[in-house]
Image (cartoon, rainbow, N blue to C red; front, side, top):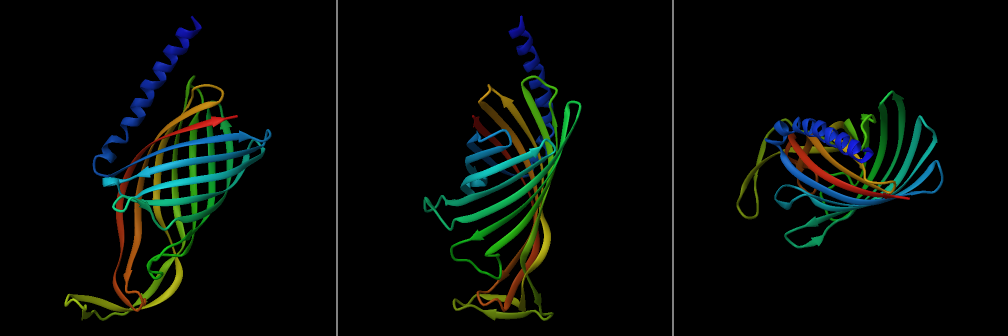
Length: 276
């Protein structure tokens, strides 16, 4: 009898989840599409301290924006209302045209999360500061070699169902030191060595002083506890991007274009965690 009750409760939970997921369909119809899959371990060093290791693969439209990401981190929860985290990630972009990794990036992060629970609902607010070092060859007037960003996330988790714990969240990302500069007011013209005409403005770089929000994210993820040690987490992310793209020459004294690029990307993902 108990097995039948659990099965029926799980079936009812899945119907509710399908309704929640259906809310994302209108957005996905006109957006770029991506996918993610990851596997990780969560080792309980003691009651308050956990070690986490994860390997994640990402793909984008037409197999672009691909990368492998390896993360190792520690979380510490001194009291039930607060949790701290630190970690390191190795980001390896994968180029499908050359079938090789290119220009890995190194990322360090630190975050703090505030948690409070009311009945079956758990509310949390998380602030994460991250530093990313970029390697390889690139235009330093268009991209930041050592970038700082702040991620702010608010989420609510429902813990009243039997087999699944859904979480809805919203997150903003703020670039803290993006490239910036001053452009002249006169549109000039030139000709490349191949005889191609182009226009530009004189440009004076001001360093990495531009602070702005370049991404807003909404998401739904589902913690499915298969057993004490095994957790499956399917999720959907909807990202609204507004990136400021600068196009200059290598010397940084000619500006060809500068504008915000707006687009939406919907990503479906699946993660697995083994806890012990």
